[in-house]
Length: 322
Image (tube, rainbow, N blue to C red; front, side):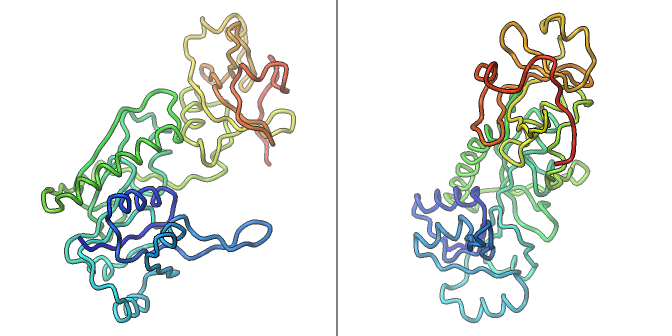
C-alpha cells in the first residue's frame, strides 16, 4: 500500500522505524520545521526527520499545512497520490483538504482508549486519574480532535506505581502491533463511532503542575509523581534545593509506618521507617518515595540516600517559586 507519513516525536520515530523494518516505506514524510535550541542556538531537527534522512525518504517541513502548501505539494510532488496517510504525534492541525488526499484512509495512532483522554497528554492524564486500564486507539482522522471512528484498540492493566516511563514501551509495542495488523489487511476493520458523552480532554501538561502540593491526599500525589516521569518531572523544595520525585506509592494504612506517622500532621515532613523506606506526610495518608533525583545527580532510591543527602527524618518539603 502506498502511504505517506506525518510525525515529529520519538514515539513517531519508533513507529516509522518499525514500518521500515517490515519493508513498508512511505512515499514521503512530513514533519515539523527545524527549531533553534540551546545556548549555542543550534538547529535541531525532529527525530522523524533524522530517521527519514538516514533512509533517503523525501521530507517536507511546512510551518502549516494550508492551501499554498497543498497546491505546491500536489503540483510538484513526484511520488504519486497515496492510498493511505498515517499520522503519529505530528503536532500541527490538518485541514479537511489534506485529509481527502488518500484514496483509502487517513489514520492516526493515539495513546489512550478513546474517547477517554483526547488531546495532548493522554498517558500522563490516564495515570494521574488512576485509570485501571491504558492502551492505544487506531482511528480514522476527522476534522475534530481525536474524535474519528475507532478502527481498533489494544489495552493492558495499569498497576499501582507505574510511571509514564514504565508504560511508554508497552504502548509503543501495542501501536506497532496494531499497525502491523492494519497494514496486513486494511479492509478488514469495521469502524466504530466514538461515544461523545464519554469524551474527556487530556490537557497539555504545564511545568507549574509539576510542583507537588503536599496538602493533597496520598493517592493524588503519588499519581502525579508517576504521571510526570519522565516529563516534566514532579518536584518539591528542600533547603533551597529542587528535588525531582520520580516514582512513588500511596500509603494509607499508617499503622505500618511506625509511631512517627501517627503523631504528626505536618504535610511535607519526611519520615524514615525501620525498613529504610522514605515517606512523606500528605494531607491525607503518606507517600512512599521509591525514586528521586538531586540537582546535578543521577536518580537514586531510598537505600542509596541515608547519610549521603540532606534528606533526614523531620525535615520538610515545601512549596516555593523557582
